[in-house]
Length: 255
Image 1 (cartoon, rainbow, N blue to C red):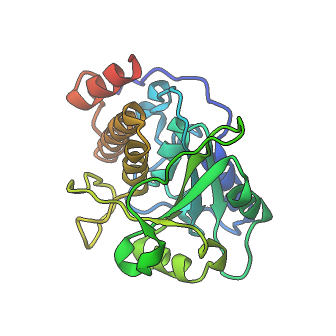
Image 2 (image 1 turned 30 degrees about the vertical axis):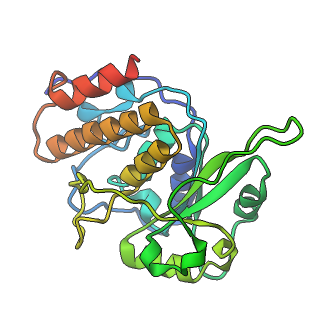
């Protein structure tokens, strides 16, 4: 099998750093279930023959993303919060715990440059907290308008509901309830509901809502290519760099 060209690893992003910290606390190696076996690239978590690093998009994004991740989520090779961190430069990642909160997370949520939105289904939230569009961006006294910061609970659905209920520091944030007619295209894990999106898909919907259509489309295309590489590695099949998914990502990356 021919190896794809290897790109130099970018400076480790927030999810990569959180993964390293979580591995350092582990008493035994984390064994991913169902994915390809063998050595994995540190930059994309895929086996070297299917490395994605050379295809990592580089584009300006005004929005920020804050990932609050369930305990082992950063360790999973199928985690798509990693893809958000690849595309959105201002991505922050924190591990979640019921009994404590990282002071850096509290500082980020209080940072005046950001307008945080907790992204969560509105049907489970008191309606006075729910918004379906971003708040008006206001510039006062020469101060730049606040940038949107999308707070995503990166976890399985049962874990995310628990995190939502047991994180009082999130109670004052507006809850952004996404409205989408599309169904999830994520194929690396099973969900009981088609309406449940993977973290990367949620990130793309948020970017679209913020008016960053190019970034949203690029993140969508990047997820498709990541899924392609992951599944073909699992099936021991070579990657077709000329298929529709790769050509779409290439076209968006060259805009």
